[in-house]
Every structure is written in structure tokens, then in C-alpha cells.
Amino acid sequence: MRVSVLTMALTVALAVALPSQCSAAGWGAFMPSIATRLTGLWETGELELLGRYCTYSVKPTFQQWQLYFIGSMWCPGWTPIRGVAETRSRSGVVGKMTQDFVRKALRADLLSKEEAETWLSH
Image (cartoon, rainbow, N blue to C red):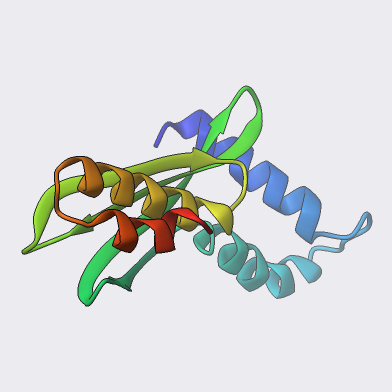
């Protein structure tokens, strides 16, 4: 990640986390909170898709001074297909990348239309 992006992320986190007045002693109390907020922007996890375990990762990015989230999902041992998505919503990126994965798996005839509908209708 570029230094400018990290600098901006830290500045935004400080502005949000710190009150308008803060003393030198107060910095120590806020540092764990800032670190938690920043590291919470990245996520890696697993989800089950039609009886198969898939892995996903989410990371933040800045575009034109706005925070976006990029998500990627893959199912090792099943297919090399990768579902990807980019949204402004931290909670919505997992759903969007899952839908992208399902669409690609459907086109590759790995899923039936009925199986895909369950995931695409949400």
C-alpha cells in the first residue's frame, strides 16, 4: 500500500477517534482504539457455498479521497474461479463478491440455475 494512502488513513482515523482536545497523556489511551479501527478494515475468512468451503478477503482502498472496499472470494479444491467486488460498503462487499462468484460458476456450468438463484436473489 502506498505511503500516502496509509498516511491519509491514519489521519482520518485520528480525526474520528480523538476528541477535539487531547493531552499528551491521552494519546496512550487512544492508540489501541486507533489500531483496532485500522486493522478492522482488513478481513480474511471462510464461508460455505453449496457444501464447499470458500475463502474470502476484504481490504480497504482510497479512490478520489473516498474509502472503498475490495473483496475477493475463491474456493480452493473446487474451481479456479474468483469472485471480486468493489463497493463503498464494508458489509456489502462480501455479498457482492459472492454473487460475482456464483455468476461465473453458473457460466462455467458448475452450478445449476436453481442453485444459483438462491445466491443471486439476495
